[in-house]
Image 1 (cartoon, rainbow, N blue to C red):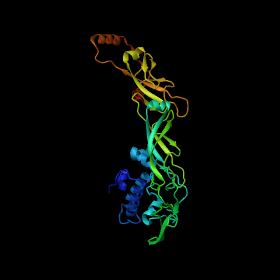
Image 2: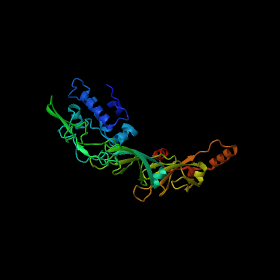
Image 3: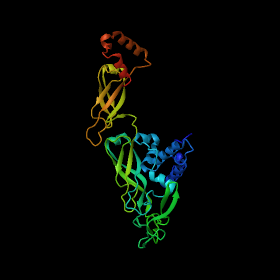
Image 4: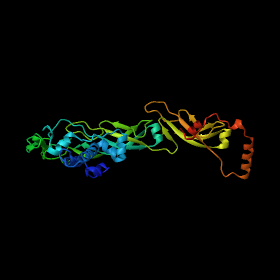
Length: 372
């Protein structure tokens, strides 16, 4: 048996499938693969769990956005653990086509809108100072023309004749599990119980529409790559007067060729010619605030680390800054001229044990050489 690694392939839907397509495909697969129905297939349970895992991800807007950008590894790194069984109500609907308790599908109370996930990419220097970032995304918003009721302004909203205002169509059927009441949303009012006499021309009577949104996000100083910022009520509009969902902004910090980030510290490396490392020198090193002078003490050894206090990243929402750690890469001169070689030979002849002695043991030397 070979199960597709891609969640979209598991459910047999395109990558731009909407929520209804994803739900419909999962329900179809649930009917085909559920172990209680497909008992003749020894691999039915494995196939069903694989489909349920894909549905758990693709039916959730935030998980789906993370999966689309970073794949299954990104989900696992974010702490997602699939249950392998999917939504009970969706599985029930797969077999009976309605609410397990017979009460769903009609006009309910206020329902919160769905959340939205977007990504904002910034530079390391911007992460150090904090920065406003504009992010653009598409969201379902309340129609401004009809104010969400789906009717042309000044026209009435009437009780749905098809369902008598209940928003549901009910049928009773016999199944292997006994008599089941099947309740589905009315196909005329779509579960609302009411219909506009003259549907709104702007939103075609839906009360909501898709709009392109742009919002400015204040990225705080000290933020790390992969952290999220939550903006309340900036997601999809709610239904029946419910509040909007939230907007989650995943912040990506581009790598800086000069530095490696280690918590609130930054690490960089400089090349120092062996004679200068022996004699001591002053060199310029890069920092987020511009180049600064760094004193390299005489006798500095390869891979020694020199520290510039307070030249690292600020701690998130605190004033203290980390340090800049400078790793010294002692460069041995090559392609010496005749004169240079003579000078090096004369120096070598004068070096004694006191110049070369090092109190480190061999393991300490190895750890320092490999940056441990």
